[in-house]
Image 1 (tube, one colour):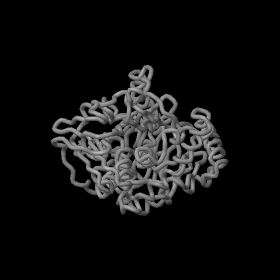
Image 2: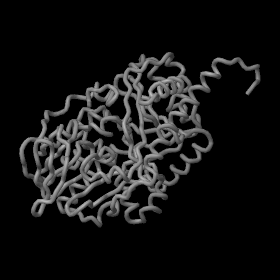
Image 3: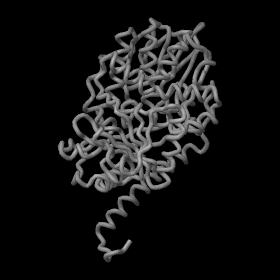
Image 4: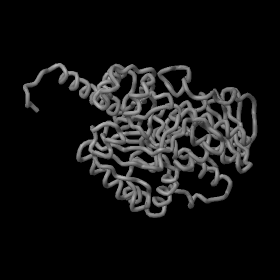
Length: 441
């Protein structure tokens, strides 16, 4: 629940209040029923409302309960997959469309926050992808080459220039993406909900979709105390899918990700750390990420779950990593800790599904939910309004296919990240406790 500090942490504490909502009771009718009150569902509702098309959103918990209220808040352009690999996987037509859509995704987020006055700490100042070692820098150089070939405003920074922007010499370089930035993610979700309601959408929280069945030429969606009759249905629950169309979740492997927020740093210290306030993540497989909020809290995160002993391990690692990157911070005190689930597809690319006649879904964001969720909601609204056809979408129509060895992969991610962090924290603690002879490596 949102009042669980381990659930949404800092974002639940600092986001403006959500618009008033209540559980669905009784039977209602609408043009489009939307399952899920995250970025995709709320963006779909907003853009349907802008077109005068009626819709009702049913959310099992509260607005932004899933990944929309737990993530780092990096508004990225594109996916993890490099542009040329993406085109090789999807083909020239779909691949080029997807790259254009997602490359412009952050601009759509900034536009919506401006037009609807959403108070979500929107900071369109770019992001910094930090390279670890020569291998990491080479990866960034190739990524820069591919994006620059497409005219994207990205810049490869050498070690010294990266150090000036990052405030640390720990990285071999960085890729600056000027399209991107950061937001307060739960505040953005709540702002989307308020904007959608203002355009005529109805949103019902504490209303899990328990069953979906055909009814005449449309669908009947049942919740514990009510039902929605609609001509078409959008399933926008992604990794948090539970009862209806659960195959959406089964095709993805859960990657847990946690965040820890420091207490507000003194201004003289905070200004030495990423002075341009870009969001940062690195090139390691068990990556780290960090960014500031408006009160100079540093939000630091990585792969891992804060359960089964993981909380202590990841907390020790985070303190050690922060001390290594930014020793001027001094002893680290974390004010909030929280974690959530990222759904990873087999090729690290999103999916578009026609699950049945008139039942659609975009999903599989692979940790890139903010801008993709926003623009896929725009696409969904345009599709349902008849402005575009399925053949015009940036993704081919596919059916969900269960992920192979899903349980084992998820166990590997959780325990593997914990082992890596335990080793890294333990190594630094050991090195600090041992005095080596002068000149020793």
